[in-house]
Structure formats: C-alpha cells, structure tokens
Length: 319
Image (cartoon, rainbow, N blue to C red; front, side, top):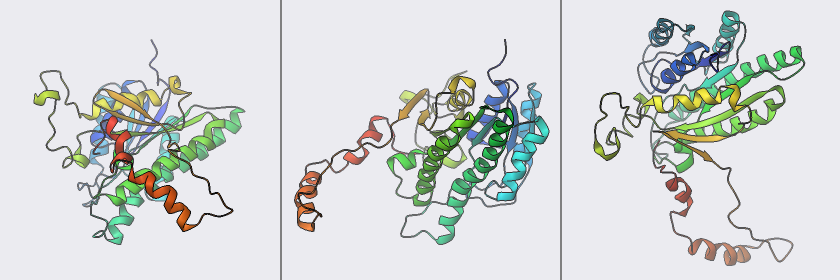
C-alpha cells in the first residue's frame, strides 16, 4: 500500500532538534524524501558556532530507517541561503512539494527592557526566515504550475505560537513574529491557491529546548504520573508531527489559510477574529463625547480578562 507522501519531497527547517526533528521523521515515515535544514547553533537564542551535526544526524536517522534524506546547514533568515535550500531539494529529488517552516530562536525580555538587537534577531529568524523559504518555494510551484498547465501539489506548514493567541508578557518580539507568520500564511494561502498550493499555520505546544522554562513545572502525564513504557510525555513533539504529516498530504487539499492549535492528542481549529460589537455615530463624525458614551460603558461591563476567554477555553495559557 502506497504511503500518503510517497514520491513527494519535503523541506523541514530547524529540523535538527525538537519539533523539527519529529516532523522530519514523520514526513519520512509517510514516504517523503526530506531535506533536513538546521543552522546547528547550540544556544536557543541563536548563539554559538553553526554546526552541520544536528541536521546530519537526523538525515542519517531517516536513512537508517530506510528513508531518503539529505542535510542542509543554512540560515533560512539569509535570503541567499534560503534560495540554496530550495535549490538543494529540487536538484536532489527533482522537485519540492512540502515546506515546513519551523526554525526559530528566543531572546525573551519585557518590552521596557528589550534591546533593538533582541527585537531584530527574533523577527529576522522567525518572520523573515518564514518569508524567505516561502518566497523561493512559491516561485518553484508557480513555474511548475505554468509548465504543467494546471495545479501542482504544494504544501506550506508554518509554525506560529500560542504566544500570539493568548499573549506572552515577556516575549513581545516572539509574539509579534508569530502573529506576523499568521498574516504571512493567510496572504500566501490566497495568492497560491490557484496553483494548487495550500498554506496553513500551527500553534504547537511541546517540551523542547525552546520551551524548557515554560513547561519545566508541568507533569509529563495527566495526574502527575510519569509516562510508562510506551507512553509518551503529553508534551512530546511526536504529538504534533502527525498533524504536519496530514497537512502535507493530498488528503488536506481543502485545508487552506487555517490556524490549528495542536498538543498532547488535541487539535483545535482557531477561527479568524469576529466582530464582538458595533457602534455607529448619530452624526457625520464621531466626537470624543459620543465615543465615551458608547465605548466606556461597554468595556466597563465586560470582565477584565474577557479578551483571553476564547484562549482559556482551548486550554491555552503558555507557548
């Protein structure tokens, strides 16, 4: 029986560890040839010397299991290196079909303490990194679609965060980047749909090097029990990878421009923001006094934390 991703080629960025590694292994298990990208810096803040070892180790793991994989050491936030990454996939396997954008760093600080470099570096890796690879993949798919005279199989799975959904006081750079990724995703979905390409974003929750502080106090299993033999940590990245595999497949052809929250055996589909209330002026132009009469009572009767009510229903508080 053919695997759902048999004959397809995938790129996974930041795939040397954590979520990216689990996603690369899952795509390979489902039959895809995988280009494993990782810049290999040891610090989760993007510090330290770049190393090919993390990407090469994951690629070797895939090949040892009977799959097809090559490693790519590259900074996806660099436009030229992102181009080279897409070229490597096409030159090695003949085409690119799936792009999973996962690479990222953290440089947490409260907004009143954050430096310009801390802001710029996180926006660069997350948001520009997502754009760079998306741009070159989109060029490839558009050219293929024109040559074929019809749609092609193209899938983009971007990585956003619950920090964008529910807020994260000490991560203004990260939350802004992850919000920007959602905007990039929906724009890309609209632009590339006619070529057969879908673009979706996930908000994963997983215990990785990036989230070791956030989830340090949370139990590995409901009820505080440690996972037994064959039981995964409820926050294991392996809980996220199957959704990525599904979104990469032909089965998800009608899933486009969506934001999905995923962790520990749960997938939640987030709706786009909806209008909660609407006010019209009785004159040609709002005055301060009229806005005060309309809006102040409205917000006075709402609970202070109602803004985050939808997030709390989904069980989202950190990420």
